[in-house]
Amino acid sequence: MTSPALDVAATLSDWIRQARRICVLTGAGMSAESGVPTFRGAHDSLWSRFDPQRLATAEAWRADSALVWGWYRWRMARVRRAEPNAGHHALAALTRLHGDLALVTQNVDDLHERAGSTVEAHVHGSLFALRCFDCAQPYEGEWQDCDPDTPRLRLPPPVCTACGGQVRPGVVWFGEALPADAWNRAEQATLRCELMLVVGTSGLVHPAAGLPGLAQRHGARVAEINPEPTALSPSMDLAWRANAAEALPELLRRMA
Ligand code: OAD
Image 1 (cartoon, rainbow, N blue to C red):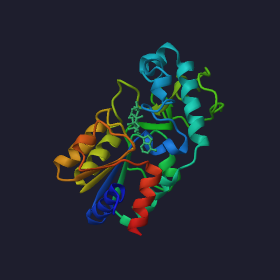
Image 2 (image 1 turned 90 degrees about the vertical axis):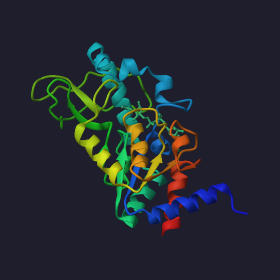
Image 3 (image 1 turned 180 degrees about the vertical axis):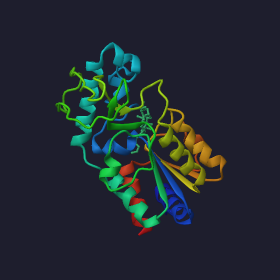
């Protein structure tokens, strides 16, 4: 007898074969098996341990930039220590195999790139795309390294070489607009796809969480890979309860 997990894997690999254009939307769960903490859900998730209002807003930066910079430096150190997992590698291989797969991520890490993928859009920015808080000039200079095992270290941010302002991480904070170019590319990839694969996101943060619905309204199938039910699950055409680092290699095996 075939198990339900094998059925969804078979169906999804058929859908991948049939779709001329695929969009994959990833979230923090994609990098969970690389040891990068998610924001919600798990006991050690970021927003269960830290207050986003004190760490991930422009107001927080103005109030205490050293606290915010120290926390992001810790996150940067965690990501630098992490390696892409089997899911990142499988997605890169799947892209080469399929030929028309656009990768849109909410993740601010660089693990997709380090696995060999080209990311169509980082809709929430990138940890390492540093820029000045005041004049927005990109910052290419050095920054002080910190210990990946020690959060809550206060560190003074680097100084902007153009205006002398303070250098901030290149992520989108609560209350900020998404980078327009990245968002436009994400919308285009959504509108043109015939299949959207939604991997490792809780589907709670808009506007990114609206992309699967947009794809569906334009005729695409939408499928979720996530070990837990999410806010998006009820509207999915298929939900595979599995970890990214297991499901994506399984799909690749079925495609090869
Ligand atoms: P969340 O932390 O909200 O959700 C992570 C999702 O990953 C959950 O649904 C988990 O069930 C799932 N998950 C956990 N382990 C997994 C695994 N091994 N394989 C697959 N899925 C797994 O992360 P996001 O949805 O990405 O915003 O969060 C969206 C945004 O909220 C983030 O981009 C961030 C945050 O505030 C900004 O930084 C602007």
